[in-house]
Image 1 (cartoon, rainbow, N blue to C red):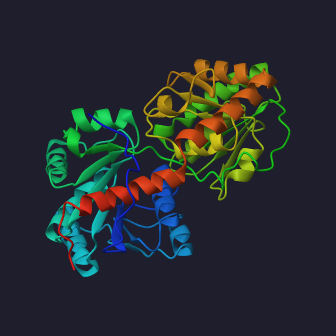
Image 2: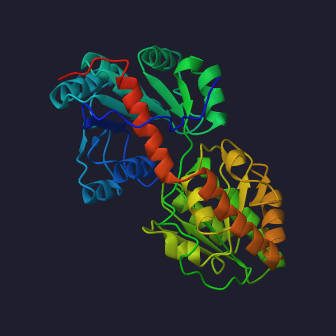
Image 3: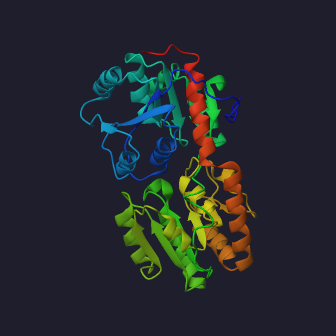
Length: 380
C-alpha cells in the first residue's frame, strides 16, 4: 500500500552534506526537468550537494542549473546501452555520491545499473508519469534494476498503480510525493490584467502526448461561438510545425498564438482567463499547478494525476481526452460566467497552497534521502 511521504523528524546532523547525483535524459523544456531544477534550486545547501548528469544532450534548462551553482554534464548518445552504463558507472566511481536519483524509465535503466557497478549506496527513482520501458528485454532489465532501487517515488496515486501492477514495485519501497510549485514565484499576488472572459492559455511541450491538436480543434468550436476568443500556446517541441499548419487549416491564425518557450511564464499566465490542458497522459503537471497558483481556473483532461489536482466544479472542470467537443464546451462554460472565473480561480490558488507547496516537496525528498542512507553504508 502506498503512502504520502511525511515530515516526521528532523534530519540527522551527521554526515552532511549528502552528495546527490540526479540522472535525467535531457534538460529540454518539460515538467520533469522543471521538477529536478526546483529540487536543486530549493535544496538545503548545507545538507545537500547536488549535480546533474544527462544521458543525452543538456537543453534550454541547463542555464537554470548553472545559475544556482549545480554542475551539469552529459555522457553522450554514442554507443549501445551497456557501453553507456559502463561510462556512467566510471563517472559515479569518481564522484562517489551517496544517492543517485533517477528520473523516468531511461534514466533508471542506465542509472540504477551504473550505481550498482559504481557502488553507490542509495538509488532513488522518481516515476513522473505512467510511462514504462517497452519491449520484453528492456522491461525485464528495468524491473531487475528496481530490485536494488532503495525507493521508487511516484508523483501521483495513478502512477503508483502503474508502478505496482506493471513495474512490479513492492509496496514497501513505494512512496507518493506529489509535485509542487514555488508559491512565491507563482503567486496570486502577481499583477493580473482584468478578466475579459475570452483568453485561454496552455503551457507545455509541443508533443503528441500533450495533444494540442485536440485543443486547436476545440478552439475552432469556441471561436465559432465567441469570435473574440484567443488562445496562447506556450512551449516548443517536435509537433510545432504540424500544429501551426493545423491552426492555419482551421482558420485560427488570428485567434491562436504560438509563443514558444517563455521563462518566466508568469507574464503570459497573468494575461489569461483560464488554463487548458489537453494531454492524453500526465503525472502531476507542473504547468497545471503553476496556472492554479496564479489563480487561474482550469479545464483539463481526465487522465493520470489531473484528477488528483483538479476538483470539478470547484477549481475547474475535467473532460474526456481526445474530445474537442467536450473541451470546447467546458471552456465556453467557464468563459461565459465571470463569477465562476473568479470563484474557481481563488479556489485553485487555495488548493495549491494546501496540497502542492514546493517547499514541502523538497523537504520530503531530503528526508527520504536521509532515511534511505540510514539503511545503507555511507561510501567515504
